[in-house]
Length: 418
Ligand SMILES: Cc1ncc(COP(=O)(O)O)c(C=O)c1O
Ligand SMILES: N[C@@H](CCCC[NH3+])C(=O)O
Image (cartoon, rainbow, N blue to C red; front, side, top):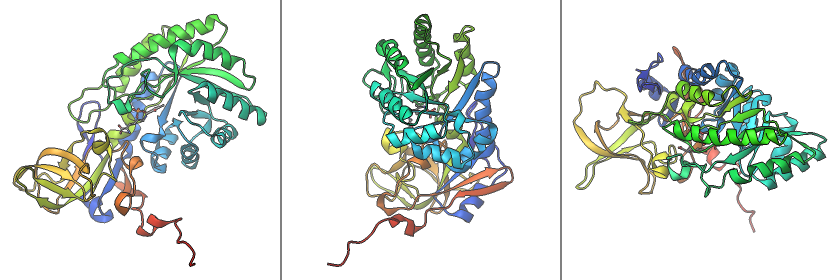
């Protein structure tokens, strides 16, 4: 059975794997990813960028399992990281530090040192204080740090307020009106080398227009900087391309990349992309089993063995993800359910008001769960985090064991007897 959504047209995309068998073998809840889909989505960006100089830096935060990173590293992917931990993962997965961009508003001194030691491609700098810190650390190490400034173009990405990043009121980047001045300050810092210009306006964008608006503003800035003698070599357009969860119709990566390329109008710029969700979301599902059906006057509940600790997107952003029975051939009575987990929170739901034909013990797949799924999991209610499996053609590999119960208190200690 195939339950991998192909983001281009919403079709289920096939790997030769039987999800029911995987659930029986490895238990539920269980994340399952498709290698072929990860690769196809990465290639969609890389191929479309084709004839211009470019670097596809997969955003590690979307899904940082080592096997996922390794699949992309083998394709020659770059990586967008936001912490030392993510850089360590990239290195452990065989990624090339020379293709790493380091984003994030709060880089610590030790993180900057480590990134410099590893010779990363570029720091995406988000404040004047951070510029000064990187300059100082690089100076102490006798190094020069390659930097881009993340510019906040004040554009409404039209996405959920929690994942919108390019507005004035957001904490990210340097306001575009101040950017030219900040580049001049950077140019005067001895241990910095200006390489690029960066922006990221939000996540799950379903239109190209806001990206184009941002790029147009950035190109004006790039031209103004050139006139001042500051030469920008690469333009990092961030991530943010949305995927189809329900009936959205986000542009395909190819269309998005082509339109961005057209905006460059022959400028000699390397394009950097930081897609996370567009590569990983529809390459994965979360498998969960129905524990109980609980009919009620106001609501029917299907209580499943996955919960908000496994997939927090519905609780956190009221995100909608498709939930389907894995075996559709079973004859069941249809009813409308809230699909809820066992956690002691009313917000613990995976989906609301879903018409499903199910009974106790049935296996469900929560689709589009490959991005911002496992990575946002927690141990709330002392629940071990789910296992992860990667399907590769006929084969399936456990790429992370379900967390053993004893790991739940690893590193904790009792107070000494008094
Ligand atoms: C700086 C940066 N780059 C890339 C991404 C990846 O975004 P997405 O998963 O929407 O492509 C994010 C997250 O939104 C981000 O903050
Ligand atoms: N975690 C968010 C996306 C965050 C993007 C990170 N900058 C989601 O699940 O939609």
